[in-house]
Length: 109
Image 1 (cartoon, rainbow, N blue to C red):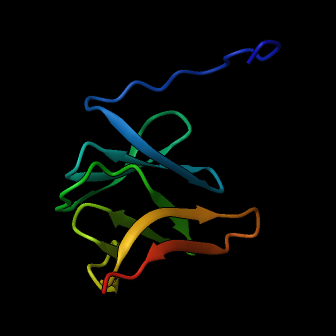
Image 2 (image 1 turned 180 degrees about the vertical axis):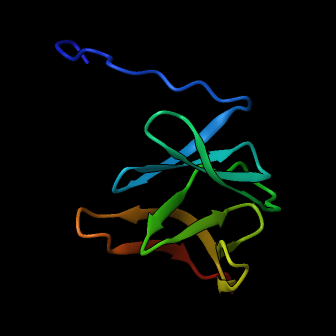
C-alpha cells in the first residue's frame, strides 16, 4: 500500500478474520462463533451465530448466502445451516470476480 490512502476504518468489537464483499455489504468472520454482515458505514445488517472448531478465516458471500469453512472440523457450511460438504481436509475457499466459488480439498482415506 505504498501509494494507497486509507479512506475509512471500520472498528468491530471482536477479532476479525475472514472478509468477503458483495454489492455494498461486507461479511466478516469474527473469531470462531459469529459471521457479521455490515454495510460500508459499519452498521450491522445481520449477525449469524455459528459453531466452528477453527477461526472463520475462509468465507465467501455469494447470491445472498455465506459459505464458510471449518478447516479443523473438515467441513464447509452455508449460513442457513445446510452442510455443503463434509469430507476431506479443506485448504482454502476461493471466490473469483464472477462470484464463482471454488473449494480446495484433499480427501482423507
